[in-house]
Length: 95
Image (cartoon, rainbow, N blue to C red; front, side):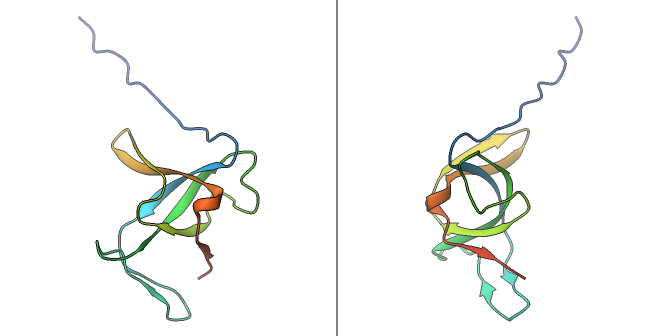
């Protein structure tokens, strides 16, 4: 019996949703702002990988901050990402 072909799945966010790949390490911006990623931190950072048609002002590749408990965790092909609404974002990080 042949091995089944691997299943390729992608996420396309709808409406004002976006897909964020969390960044797990501590981040220090060019201006010296340190964003901790410890379990005690109230916010997380990540890179936007896809945006829905109504997620205005956010583009793929943007680094963003969001609350620790926001959105939904999704695991695809061994990669964990978050599905968030545009309104759940705290800020865009410019470094």
